[in-house]
Image (cartoon, rainbow, N blue to C red):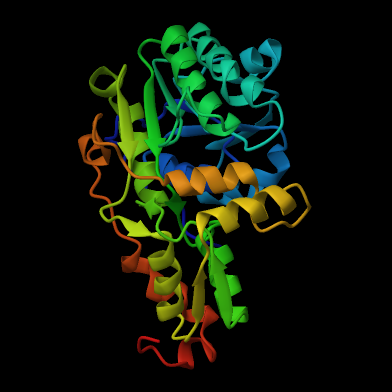
Length: 324
C-alpha cells in the first residue's frame, strides 16, 4: 500500500472545497496533485469524469470527488458548483462551438461560481488571446476573459504560454517523431515560444486561489524563463535524444499552403488555424504581471529534457548521452 500524501495543514486551502472544471486533462492532473498536497478537498468536474479516476490515488480517503458536468447548461453547473469555496475553470477547446465553451460560456461559468458562493475563481485563458483575431480559438479566449471579468469581478485570469510536462501532447509528440524520422519539416521555424512547466502553472493557480484578496481582479501571464524558436525547440529534443536529425525550415507560404490543403483531413500535420497560432508565437507581452508575481520561480525546459528524452534514445538509459 502506498503511503498517504503529506499534507500542509497550515495552508489557507486546507479543508476547502475546490472544484476544478475540466480537471481530467493534462493540466488538471498536475493541479490536482498541487491542491491535494495543500489539503484541499477536490471536486473534479468534467464531461467524462471516469477518465479522471486516476487522480483519486493522489489524495487521502474521501479527499477527491468526481462529477459529470455540461458547462453549457446552467442547471448542470449549479449542481456541480454547489458548496464550492473556490473554482478553477480549465475548460477549453480548439474546435466545435467555442463561443459556448470558452467565449460567452466562460462568463456563464463565472456567474455560476459567484452564485454558488465561491470566494475565489481562477479562469485559465492563454497568451495570444485576441478579440481581433481571425482564429476562433484566440478570439473566443479573449471574449471569454471579458465575460469572466463582467460576471465575477474578483476573478483571477491566468494566460499560460505553451505548457510542457512529461505527459504533455506537444513535447512528447515531437519527441516521438524525431525518434522515428531521419528528417522533419519545421512549420514556422522562427516562431517564438516561451514554454512553461505544468507544475509551475499548477503552483501559480493554487497560489491565486489561496490569496484571492491579493490576486483577485488581476490578470497574469504564465511563461517560462527562456524564449526559443520552433526550430531550436526541435533541435533541443534531437540533442537530448542523442540523435542526428535534419530539419527542413518551411517558408511560411509553403506552410500555409500545406495547412490549407490538408488541414481538414484526419491526421493532418497542421491546420490553417494551428499554423496561424504557431506563427504568432506564444511569448509573454510583459504588459501584465507574470508568473513571478504569483510567487513562482519558473523552471526552463532544459532542466527536464535530458531526463525525459532518455526513453527515446537508441538504447534508452544505456544509450549515449552526449550532444547529437
